[in-house]
Image (tube, rainbow, N blue to C red; front, top):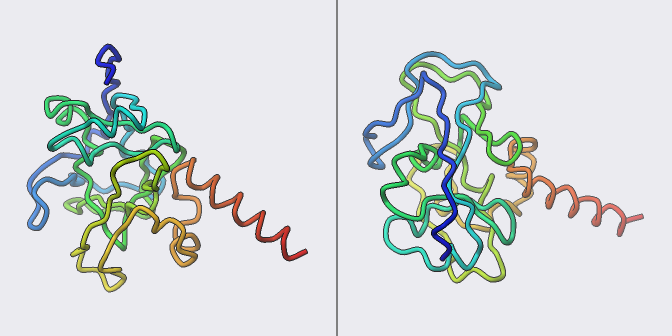
Amino acid sequence: MNHTRSPLFSWMHPTLEVRATHRYGQGVFATANLAKGKILIVMGGCILTVEDENALEGVVANKPIELSDRFSIGPRTPDELARMPQHYINHSCDPNCGFNGQIFLVAMRDIQAGEELAYDYAMVMHSSPDSVNYFSMTCECGSPLCRGKVAEDDWQRPDLQAHYAGYFSWFLQGRIDRQKRTASEKRT
């Protein structure tokens, strides 16, 4: 792993705070009302190759957020984790925030003071052919929309593509759009 690269730390809207949740340890909460479309977090971190990510151990091993098939962004050490609040945003199958571009997390709807931020991990997670890790988890978000299991390839689900259109990371939205064009061309 190349430790000479400097991390670019995240920015978090001043009306957000990291604090304990009732369910998942830490989470990010709104301390004031936030309007739909508001930029909540600009994600930062170390730019990691798939090989760098494969070498991560401990608490940081499952933290990188994919930017492409070859690169992700995240912490290399537990000390860096605290300066990257995007890693404290938990999953929900009924999220209140999503992506605008690759590193901007935005409100998908109005968010009320006291509300915990959550996005669906399907909006950004995908498998890489060279990764030695495959992420999946049992979901306990409690939403009526809960899938029960969250996995790296959920972005491929047509129901999620329709529901989150425009809120996937730039990279995944591009893959979805290319797949739809290819399918459309095959039909004509």
